[in-house]
Amino acid sequence: MTSSGRDNLVIISVLVLVGAGYFLFKNPSGAPHAENHSDVRSMGQALSNLGELPEDYDGLIKLGNDYMDHGNYAIAAECYRRALALDSTSLDVRTDYGACLHGMGLLERARDEFARVLEKNPRHPIANFNQGIVYLDMKMNDSTRIYWERYLALEPEENVAESVREFLKSMNQK
Image 1 (cartoon, rainbow, N blue to C red):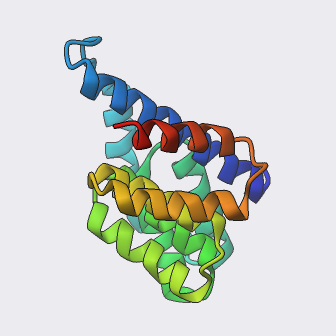
Image 2: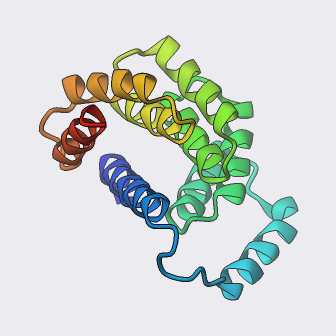
């Protein structure tokens, strides 16, 4: 999968999760929560293999992408963290690291990672989008609006752009 394809997949996944979260917040008596024990077991197995992670940058990125694509954010974050220790210049890797931190519920740390990316490149579309997601989760709608409007200015025709517009519109109606 190409980097832009993976980015689009991440964006769409995040929007689906945000929409589901919004629905569950509005309807807390929704579907019952079910645990997936096989995911817990695979995460435990992956954590026990941390010492066996690749030591090369490209290997860490590839493995991080694989874990992130499967929702194993803790292991993916560790891969990205190690890759950034080898080369801290990749804004895309730092953005993926921030997305993993967000996926683990570490909102302040995710916000800080996206801020680092945007300090270097304020026109990084995915970092702007993800920063908006973090602020949405922090219930800071004004900041969400700022970053999502920046995202829309940068990527007005992306697949997810219409969903972002609709979400912003619904935020304005509240």
